[in-house]
Image 1 (cartoon, one colour):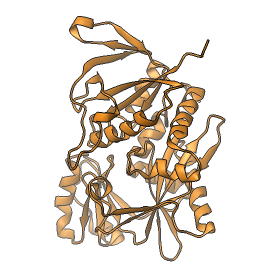
Image 2 (cartoon, one colour):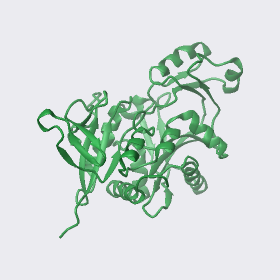
Image 3 (cartoon, one colour):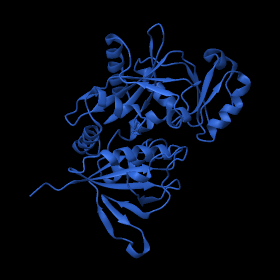
Image 4 (cartoon, one colour):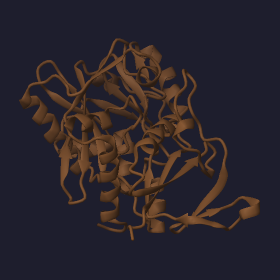
Length: 356
């Protein structure tokens, strides 16, 4: 008799501003996962926070400028490893047990340690970093503090705390202009403004605060934008992919450039000499270890014209959309999408839950 399939819940959508991109990432995973080994259960989280039995990959693509969303479905609840229906006529019916969760969630209320904590309490293995690493990496200010403490080079930044409304003159002098004003705990370039005159700062902070009361202001870095994927294998090895370079004809790498228009170009692998390539790969693993990540991550860098390399940020659940660099970097490094997803699931199952 053949071995029973491993039950994988792919969870996506969620309450963050990255709801739509999470759906698109999930579509790519659902379309390529090895169904000979895995029995896949698609679970969507609506913007209001309801868990529902979601449709498959075909309904989760970006159509023109229209972004996908999880809006309805049979409501579910997680009870330990059991997925239980809440629909009136089937309330309490156990849909099935889950062996492992792939939380394809981006942003707050998913990528930030919240669902990781839920799954730890439920005792269900899951793909990706644990509670602490997920929370630290999601908070740009805390991530920078950890990286700086580990001796990793970062660009100048200032935090605008919840009870502050602007930067002091000393902080402005330290950063110079232009600066980028960002929500501290968000991704996909939501809520970001480029400030070229300090008179624009207040409005930029208010825009960022529509997403997050904590705001970070970063000095502009002139240089190449380089990304590198990190992957942990079931035997514990941690490896870095060949890097990618992101190039855009726009003013900066905003949401529309990332997902909706054709002004973005990505070189995979990046056109760099071997010395710089290996430096980027080694630094990516250092960043991964510094934040105590597990499973996977994407590390973003700036490379200045003089050769200096600065860590920009760390993403513990990078995008898996058709335009996302992370799976493409691993493809050119030697792992196709199906093998990549299988590796992530196998690593999660081997790790389990609990303190480690």
